Amino acid sequence: MMLKLGEALQTVGRWPEAETRLEEALALARQLGDLHGRASAQAALAEHLRKQGRYDEAAARLLRARLNFEELGDEAGMGQVLQFSGTLAAQRGDYQAARTLWTESLVIRRRLGDKSSIGSLLNNMGIV
Image 1 (cartoon, one colour):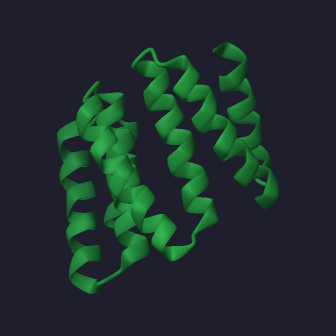
Image 2 (cartoon, rainbow, N blue to C red; image 1 turned 90 degrees about the vertical axis):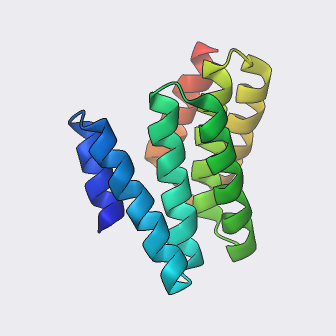
């Protein structure tokens, strides 16, 4: 619930409150031993940080999320983290890395039949 609240606050531009709620979601997931919750919170925090131009912090969060999703064998989570990582790489000007990460995400998203994400990825790849 904190995760969704954080994302909603971010959507309406309440950045400091959003970050607090996302950090609370991460702390709760840690306390409960919820690895999936931890990975999801790390990914959400990474996106939050990326949107604010805090790229190094976002990259660190994405790495943690990726490791957690890998440990879980969560393909959907991996597809999401790879997509977010590609967007971060593009914003940093590393278009080759962005394309590589988006391509990896696209393979997963196609396997899962995630049409919305497939469209988004193809759009991103067309831009870079």
